[in-house]
Image (tube, rainbow, N blue to C red; front, side, top):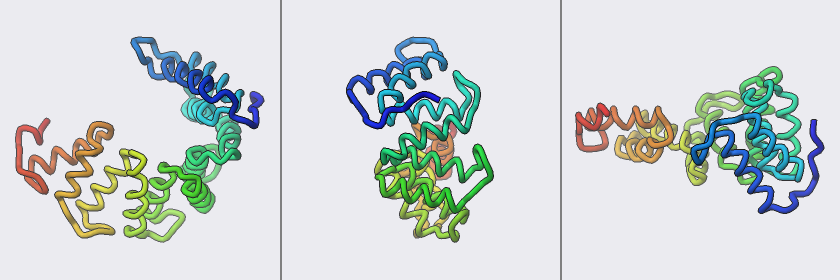
Length: 219
């Protein structure tokens, strides 16, 4: 485990290191994807105190890209960022508990971290808590609460939350059924969420909440 500094020094330089890592991870600017190279740059940022770098390192450990999958290492870097008040790190730790990554499923712990993440202004945590309420895992099933937290999450452009909001409007759960609003949220998310794109097409084809268009609905 690398030594993670306590302070986030030279913020602009750290951002540049993370950006170089992203170029390698995602093959940006016509470069070839290279997860090991990405890890190298993310680690440089993380070891200089960058929460963004710590989270990027953790995600590669969680996915096993460029390194062997290692939940212990992932948690180390997430804890390092979470201890600095990073809400997105708190969200990911919650997801690990929610799905049993690196240990048994613990919904109570997951909810605890989602709530901490929301306090730290994490839109991802708002989505996570909304999803827990929709499923009734770790909390009593409550569509009203799911609707509330999804609405908070979309402020941060969390596209899966837009899709889930659309489904709540479509199914009339936590809110009065409204195909027009469902279509609105599916359309907002469609460019970044395959399920939203599919739902948008179905509503267009069937003419629900929008003028029927069989040609575009099948696209």
